[in-house]
Length: 152
Image (cartoon, rainbow, N blue to C red; front, side, top):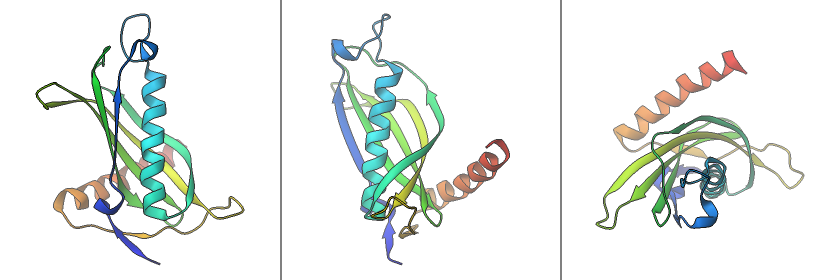
């Protein structure tokens, strides 16, 4: 099995919030943000696994603050944990101010499974952890995995 570093599959997506993305309160629709989160997470997982993938679970989608019309929204995805056929991907979403300062508005964890040509689960590349933050995120992912086993 190949090994890949966290930074090898790191993925960013930038969106501009337009009127079409707003709900009746003038804020970004949660469903639109969830679509963006899923897209950036899937690209990240594909880069890591070098396979087609499917999202099987969105865990802990935490809306911390709203985004409004004309906001620049940046979504940052990285693999935090790999099992045999699945990967946990964290997506942090920020509103970027005109001066470049970023404020986090959402954090989500997704479980994504790699697929073979017949759409069956297939082994994924191992994850090389290089920083203390990456190792801590791995440990936290194990705790989330144990919690999910009890819930699902």
